[in-house]
Length: 157
Image (cartoon, rainbow, N blue to C red; front, side, top):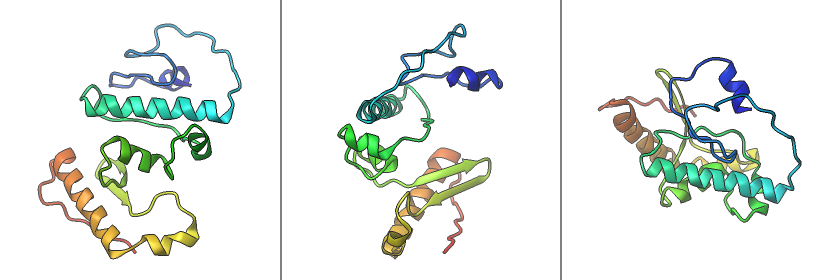
């Protein structure tokens, strides 16, 4: 998958491939990858360990960001990672800090008050406290990540 993605065009970044055994700026030569089936708990363990290593690299300053594909929550649970989802696992690995999921594209930055929860649980999760905490997380991210010293935030109900 990585080779196919890189074949679409160059990426102006150094890459560290986790969970695949590959490391470096890019795979050296195209190679055939043999498909194999994994048990869900094996896939969950590989994904959980890759995320754990990615966070370790980020906290050590060895990488500036983490790019992750979808992670199957049930497989993570079977492998012993007992978090509702990837956001909560990342929070724990970062030191049990308060986090929010941000989607960023140029000047557009969107922070989600809730993550992947059943619709029936949304009303209980969207509290004044949670909205304010997400606003503070966003304010800090804008200041430290984008140099926006006095960010202006819009809150959407």
